Image (cartoon, rainbow, N blue to C red; front, side, top):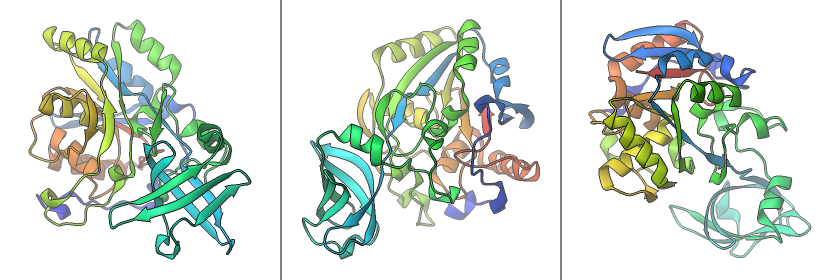
Amino acid sequence: MKLSDFDYHLPKKLIAKYPVEPRDSCRLMVLNRKDKTTEHRVFRDIIHYLKPGDTLVLNNTKVIPARLIGKKEKTNANIEVFLLRPIEDNIWEALIKNVRRLKKNQKIIISNDFYVEFLDRDDEKTIVKIHSKDIKSDLEKYGHVPLPPYIEREDEEKDKDYYQTVFAEKDGSVASPTAGLHFTKELLEKIKEKGVNIAYITLHVGLGTFKPVKTEDITKHKMHEEYFTIPKETLEMIKKTKENKKSVVAVGTTVVRALETYAKFGKTEGFTDIFIYPPYEFKIVDKLITNFHLPKSTLLMLVSAFADRDFILRAYNEAVKERYRFFSYGDAMLIV
């Protein structure tokens, strides 16, 4: 499989800058893998495609306000620090533009008693130390919502709500598991009332999810590791669902990657760098709810492995023609 096999034309105006409100009123394209047909619905109609005894699996990770805008010590020049993940107490892996201009142990001042110290870098990563009396509180106060660059606007106060799922619980993501953004608490309640099980995994989404594939031979691409954990009760629910010949419905590619990591390696916790592309035999996931993904992205490759590349690209071209809204704040797709 070549990188160019996963390209499609997307007019820039179809990239959503804001989500629709309420969350579950976005559009939903339903893809039937068996019949190779598509339907156009509204997201809250998802309930009609879920059956009693099915299990809906959600990623309950919580996005941290990981973008810090500060000033270099001495020069007072503006500089941005994007926190990626904690390595140990107060030591984080980060992304800093123009990092080569920083000297070792140079401080980036965020506020009077909150600053970031540059420690080290290599080709792969930048390491910083955070100096703060209460990191969580300071991030909430001074951090910015890490909106993806293609949204092309600064974050606003309402993004703190928009860019978080209603079931977000475990701090750790620097990007939202966006397929879950379409669910409201009311819709989840109705789904439960229908007899559908709701289960959770946690996968902290890193920037690696959006790392562009630069090799034409996609098998040469290396995924970044992301931390995940699957609770015992989720695995028991999935086992029971399978025994009863019902469907496991993954909400988002992050859920797929966590569950398929477990299926492949038997791991319920740790780091995963699983890269799913065609051909791939899915062992747990039966149906997938997902957003529309960037051309040539690893996420597009994953959904192409799930539903046949030609069928997916045909559906994407139809979505463009029907003026669906794309990417993080855009519309959704259900693959059955």
